[in-house]
Image 1 (cartoon, rainbow, N blue to C red):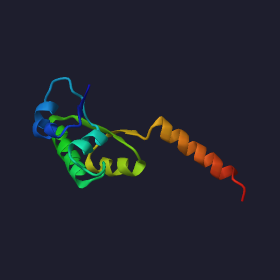
Image 2 (image 1 turned 45 degrees about the horizontal axis):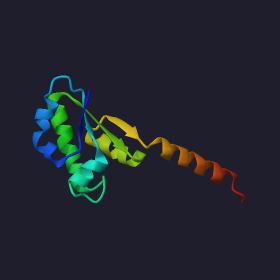
Image 3 (image 1 turned 90 degrees about the vertical axis):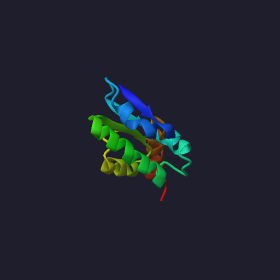
Image 4 (image 1 turned 90 degrees about the horizontal axis):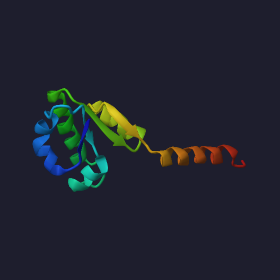
Length: 109
């Protein structure tokens, strides 16, 4: 069971959310979280600081921290911050990257 954290108000009650029996993971919804925090992007220091707070609350409660990461680089940074489970990219991103690879490979020199 995942508790989705994507609202600024959730930061004030992270320990209470993490303590709910049956919750396995605190899932950060990065885009909605960024908007809620008034951040310019999901890598804005406001958002990254909020991730740090979620990770700390999760550790105190023995909960996994999970999130979506649009790129491998974002996932790597969040992993270093203590996030342990990821959805990386999307089916559309994977399809577009594969198509670009084909075009690049077959493009005349």
